[in-house]
Image (cartoon, rainbow, N blue to C red):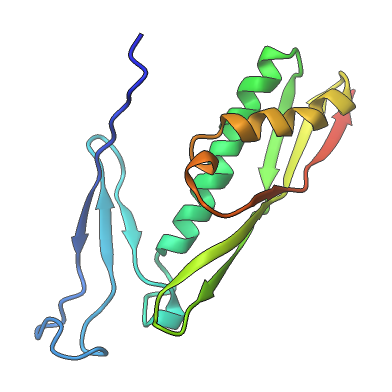
Length: 156
């Protein structure tokens, strides 16, 4: 069994307005992110950094990666433990702190999964978020806390 996996993406800057980076406000932050066989993602910087608010920014993509990774890990542990999930949404939030030198870092992310199960043990379903968190590759790769505020809804 191969335990090493490799991924590849391509990014192209699409923000040259004719004079390149001749000045800080003279260029666009638009990018196009691609990978073989996938739909492109239109990216940019966050609006506060002169980006295009209509495009995904790296901070949103990181937050989405954490949220989706937890979702996929949760579905796996739920199925493995006999919990039938019929719905899952997440209203994730993150905080990035900008530093005086122009850099910055995320200080925390909070995932708020709302999981609907069709019967079963709600307490078990709730506890499985801890196991899912340990199995999430993305959460294991970041150096800030990824917090969870899950909610379980049981429908007959």
